[in-house]
Each structure stands twice: as C-alpha cells, then as structure tokens.
Length: 481
Image (tube, rainbow, N blue to C red; front, side, top):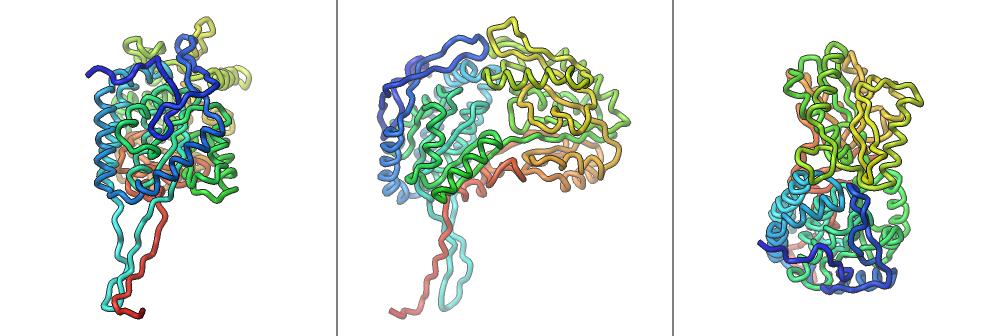
C-alpha cells in the first residue's frame, strides 16, 4: 500500500487533531552520513499549555468511553501503521541508524504490541461479597499523561507507552527525542483521523520541552524512558506537583555462562545480544561472566564469531549488524570508553575502533578480556558496541558480582543444567531474568527494573495498571438513606 504521508514533510506539531506550525524549527541528522535531515517543529511553552488544555477537555469524554470502543480505535491505528510499515522502517533506519531489518522488526513488533494491548482489559475485582454489601476494587484513568520517548527504540518504546495510556482511558501527549523525532511525528499523523481531537497529541521540541512537561500542573502522569541521571531529575520534577510517574532507566545487564554450556549453540545469541543495535539497548548483555573452565575457549570463539558475523556499516547496507552510534554525544562517550582500554591497560581480545575518517558515527565492536570488577567498562553502561568478558569460579561469588551494581534491569543464566540455572536466576536482582536466552520481551509480560533501573513497570496487565488510580467502591445492599 502507498504510504499515507510524505516522509520529508513535517508541517507542525499535532495538537487537537490538527497540524500546528511553530516559529522555530530544527532538524536531526542521519547518523550514518552526518547529513541534515528534515525540519521539524519546536514546541513553545504556550503550545504545550494549549495541548494540555485540549487533552484535559478530551479526557472528559474519552475516559467515559468503553474499553471496547477504545480498543477498536487502537486496532485501526495498528492497521494504519502496518499499512505503512515499509516507509516507517526506512525512516527509522534513516533517523536512528539501526539496520533496516532491525528497523522493520521494531515497526512490526509495535503493531503486535498494540494489538495485544487491545486485549488487556482491566476489570473490577470483587474484594468482598455478602448479603449486606459488595466491595469492588475498580481502576479509573489518571488523566492527562506525558510520554517522554528515547532515541534508541523510538517507535516501540513510544507506542508501548501510548497504547496502554489510551486503552485505560487517559489522554496522552508524546514527546519524541530531539534526536529521533520523525517516526513519532508520522505515527501521530497516522492517528489524526482515528482518535478524537485532543486524545493523542505529539509535540516535537528541544531540551526545554521535557522539563516543561514534568513540571506542568495540568499533566497528571509522566512515563519516561532514558538514562538514570535524567530519570532522577524527572522524578524530582514530578514531585513538585505529586504527579504519578513510571521510569524505565538504564541497565548494565549481566549474563552468566556456566561451564556446561554448548559454546557453539549459545555463543551466537550471546554475542548478538551484546552488539544488537550497536549496543544501544538498555537490556543488552553488557557484562558477560564466563566460568573459568571454559573462559579461554569462549573468549576465542566470541572474537572469531564477531570478526566473521558482526559487520559494521550503514543501516541500509546488506548484512550489517552494528550500525552507527545514534548521535554525536553518545559517539563521544563511547569513544572515551574505548580510549580507556589503553589508558588503564585493559586487555582487548578484540580491538575495536572508531572510524574517524567517516562522516557517520561508526564504531567497530570491542571485547575486553577480564578487566577488573571496578573498571569503568564494568561499572558503567557503555551503550555502545563494547563488552567485557569476566571470569568466575563459584556460584555465590558470581551472583554477588552480578548483583553488585546499582542497576537491575535484566540478567541471564546460561547452562544445560536447568535446575541449577533456575536456582541461580532466582537469586539475580533484575526486573527481567532469562534462562538460556537474553532480551526476550512480550507485550503481555511486565517490563521494568530493580534498584536504579527504574520505578514501576510497563506492558502487560501490571503495566496497564500503572496508568490508573484505584478506587475502593462499597455498595451496601441495605438502604440506609
């Protein structure tokens, strides 16, 4: 089907079902080429005020619609996204840098997520029922929500917030990352003819827009995905008006590889889960603990596999796994991490490097050989294609090391002995823990972090509940009035 939009045209923010132009515009760049992309609007504080006002008005009606009515519109939106999936995939690769196959996967998963969300209805629970009274636990929408979306998975993580908010009866304003505004604006454009005005709005802006949203007294909830540092600022800002919030923050996932694994079978997935999306996934395997009995064999095999199967290049090149790092800020951060290899005398089993002769932000994968536990590559999340391998010998020791950081988003255990693997997995402090896999997610499964990796969860029934307030409803059957 022909695309329903022009990927080069962004006439304005989407406010109350219309395009609203702005005095100021800006553009992002293609991280593979360094070339400027298309001009997009920059929202003012007045524009945000207007959007919030429209959202509050729309909430009065939208919150009273049935779940079935809301789900019907969300499913129409999913169909529209699916009909334009090819153009959205190309646009996603252009603005974010990820390989086209991964971009198409992200768009496809987003459609699947929306369709699954549309089946997750929150129903009243009966807490007590007797001859005198019935007590219900009922859930009501919070009000106007604000979604602050990251640049690494702007489509899936964006609509992973919007879908549940709408289905639970809230109205929502989505703020794309300034680094990746294009797909999110087009998703809003596709929604314009589906949802009533004011129910779903999209505002592109600069770095001022996020703080304006978190401080705004007319926004009742913020759902945010981003760094731990920024998440703490979001929480502090939300506290000023006591608005609700859900934070999905950074991770530094541990993968524990036991000595009984079949290396040729497990190594390809472990390696891909370290370098997927150029390591720019909060749930990538970022610390790989390998039992000392198989450490050398595993390390050498991982180096060989990476050399032969993990190609670096532009997202539209065939066979590419590691595309460009998304932006100049992150490129500099990852380059600094690479520079620490020589600065601190770490051993590189695979010597990655930045392609400084390229106009794009390309960095080739690096594997660091058993650095100290207190080294920066272990304790900080690099969010790039660099990963440390670390030796371990005892279960208690490796569990303590895996749990030893302030992050706790995901973790995995790899072993043939499933009883042992599950025993170890249950001791890991993380919001998602896998046995013989990593980074498996599903729309009906809650997703969130322990410790500084977040507050609350997204997705699944538990994620839907985060967009509601609870009401205890007491119905007395004997009339006293």
